[in-house]
Image (cartoon, rainbow, N blue to C red; front, top):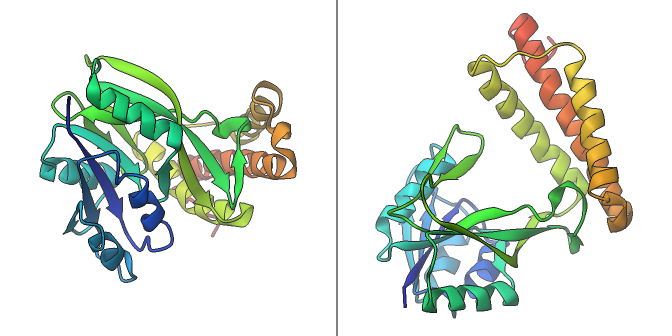
Length: 256
């Protein structure tokens, strides 16, 4: 049997961290929280759990912060969660089973995203598979400041069909607001990597995003919420490529 350390990075997560930690209590052997100096009740909530070891460090990027947490863990197997993620009952059972017989170095789980209390079971957001349980001697986080990915070249991986529940956004409007920030970061990152696009690229990528979500991924099965989300995702795709095109042509991400 193996022992597992959960690692969570936080910054002002008082609305979600309690539910996240409660889903871990009977599954993992310790929880490492690496906090970026929260100013709300995040620290107090975390310290109310006996299994939590709480650290603070200035945030520079997601991959570095997660790797710092991994380094503090007492166990080699790491379960990495975001503060707004919760283990489903099925996933709790699956992880307990893995502890008893760990045959792989890396395990991926499906992630079920929510808009408010509505699960998005179709469209571009599901199954949204993520590698989240791994042997830290075989894998580590890497990233470019926008999104972090798990580097596990040469490691043995298994996909587990059980959900992480991701309470990501309170509304479609909240998704749109965060998408604006990430589209800037995305465009700047691609520009710095010398990626160039043509004037038609924003529209073409937008249309393909919408068609893929509607026809191939059946976003309409999630009703009005699913379609509003798909429209917002297509619009976000358009803006990402539009901002990159502006950087390519005049060095500015926004119109002056």
